[in-house]
Length: 490
Image 1 (cartoon, helix red, strand yellow):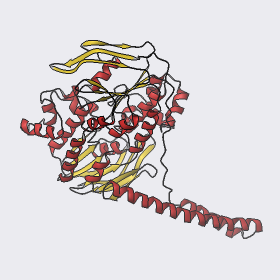
Image 2 (spheres, rainbow, N blue to C red):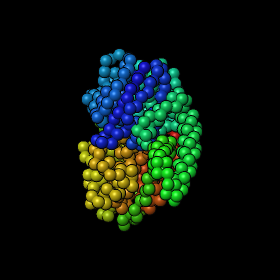
Image 3 (cartoon, rainbow, N blue to C red):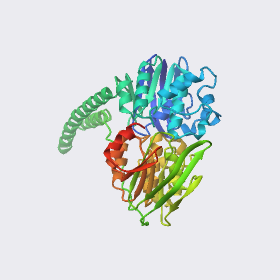
C-alpha cells in the first residue's frame, strides 16, 4: 500500500504539482502518464524519499525497488564491480537462477562482467533484473521495456500481470500499458494535479476524451450565460440607471468568469525544421577495416563502409553487438584496435547519444545549447523556447530534466547548427508518441547524411534508409522492407 497526501513539488518558483492525493492498494498495477517534462520521473523520486523542495506526506508499507530511466547515472551500478554483485548483492540466489532470469530478458552477459562497460540496452535489462530479484512489495518502473525486443517486452508484460506486489510504471509502450495496468494516474501540467482513471491505457484515453468533452460543453454553456449577463449590463449602461443593480451585475459576471470550468489545454507542438546541411565532399566518412575488442570479446571485425553524401544508413543488431561502439569510433570518441576512419575536412557531425554522453549534467540548458551551437544567448533562448523550454526554464540544470526533456534538448542542439551528418542513437527512446511523430517528420526532411540506430520498426520504415549494416554478421545490405523483421528481433 502507498498513500500520498497533499504532495507539492516545485523547481524554484514553478510548481510541477500541488496538493496531490492518491492511494495505491496492495497488488494494484498503476500506469503513470503525462507529457514529457510533466514530472513523472520526479514523482517516482519523491515516492522514494529523494525529493527536493517538496511538502506533504508519502506513506508506504513493505519494501520498494526502483528501475531508473537513465541507467548510466545509477549510483548502485557505478559502485558495483561485477554483474553478479549488482543484481544480487546479498547473494540470495544461485547463479543458475539469475542466468534463467537473464535469458527471459534476452540478456547475454557474464556474471563476472563489469556492468559499467555494458551497452545502454544491457544496462537497462540488468537494472530491471536487479529490481525483479529484490521482489519488493512496491515496484517503481521507469520505462522498463526500453531497448527490448518483442519477446523481451512480452515477458515483462506477462511478469507484471502476475506480479503479486504493487507496480507503478512509466512507459511509452502502449501494449504494456494496455495489458498489465488496471489504473492510470495522469499528470496534468495545466492544473498541477494528478487525475485518476480506472482501467488500462485505452480505457484512460476514452475516459479522458469524455471528461474533456464534458468540460468543453460546460464551459460553452457558462460562457453563453456570461455573454447574456454582459448584454444586460450594456443595456443598463445605455439607460444610465440602476447603479446598485449594475454593480451587482458586474460582481455576478466576475464571479461567473472565475468559476468557468477549465478549458482542456491543447497539445503544444514543437515546431522543428532542420537546417540545410553545410557543403561536404561525396564521401563524408569512410570506415576502413575497423576492428575493436573488449578483453577477449571481439565487438567489431574488419568493418568497411563508405558513407555517401545525403545517404541514410541504419545500424541493425541486438544490444551489445557493437552499434554504439562503431558510432563512437566514427565520432573519434573511441580508437579502433585496427583500421581507421577517414573524415572529410568539411565534415560536421551532429550526435544524439541514447545516454546523453555529450551533456555536462551540471550546466544549465542554456549553457549546454550555447556550448553545442556557439550561438549568442538571445538566439539560444528564442530557439529553446521553440522546443518548449521558455523563459526561466532555459536556466534549469540538465540533470534535473526528464529523459524526454533531455531528448528535446539534444535535438534542439542538433538543429541549431547546419551539420552535414547526423548520428542518431535511439532518438525516440524517452519520447511520448506525439513527440516521436514530430521528430520523425523533421528527420525525414533532412537533406544531409545520416547514421541511425532505432529499435522501432515503424520509425525505420518511414525513414527509408538507403542501406543497412547488420550486426553481428557484418553485412552491408541495401535497405529492403523485409529487414523490418530483423529490427523486430532486436
